[in-house]
Length: 438
Image (tube, rainbow, N blue to C red; front, side):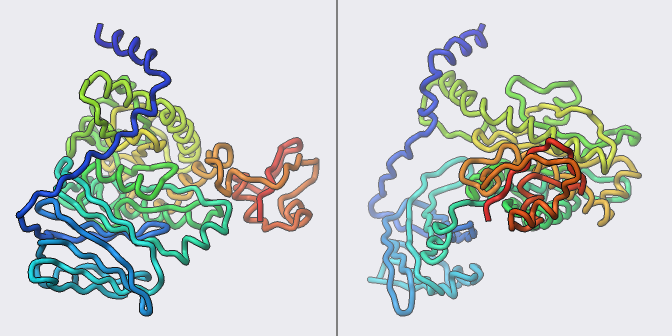
């Protein structure tokens, strides 16, 4: 009965999906209470550097720029910070150094010495989940932004999530291999192979052996404006004879099999998560309906991506399931990012555990996944990306070869291959090729 009510309500709200973009509630500043900076976190994105100041309470702040030399000054009213805390933030290509001091007796001043001119933007975040008050400072590199604007076509972004990490080792093979180690190794190889393809850029969600909540993994992919998210895992089963690779997409209505349900429960045990949407709507049914609306467009794409990758993995490893499975993995619940989870093999199978530890096998897996990603985006790249663009189309004639076609159009052969996901040298008469933009 409840499901029928939801479906009826879904129809009545079909034109209201824009309500899912919730307004950030106003944050009032508590008077008289001294704020303390408890931690500083830095992350580098494509166009900017983000610094997050974790606070014990909300605080007033101001930001301004100074030039010759380039600096950004952050003043936090009635605040303090432990001596040396800024030293833990490592310098990078934009920030040369950071220093802090006391201003007007009670205020905190943080100065960023920069290598180039930036546009600073700052905002406050209220407590959410396990996160407390946060002051976020984004430093947008003006020079880099100008270069990006000149390039009309962007790369598609693929977020690679190495499953587990830190205090969560994942499954363990009979030889003592931890899942968290294997997934990170394959993730780094996958990042390398994807970045070798024109028009695609890979970003790692987890770069080292650290624990990350599932919600944070989704947020990381969203911060990078990912067009796709791939979560890597290594399966486990009590029977050591179980073997093969599997690919999963999200299922709103539940897992597609009992095995998938058991597996989803195992992977979700580290962190319970209902979606990735924080809606400022009180009615629970409204929340669920809007969440369903936001997921509808991504699941079909996820299944399509998963099918391409599964087809390529067949050349590297036996597949456990011949079709893309669906389950309620929490890490797949980004409503606006098509996402898949790949169980690369059974780490509980001695033979597959040995393969998973092999550098050559890891490279084969990474290349197979890259081929699948490329084939999907060659068909369905987002508008405005290099892979979605073409100067012209060419219909292949009998006897044509890739090199000759590239020479005739005065384009790079590798670009022609990347735009059309051509991994073999043979062409089929009648096949239509997209001629890439230079």
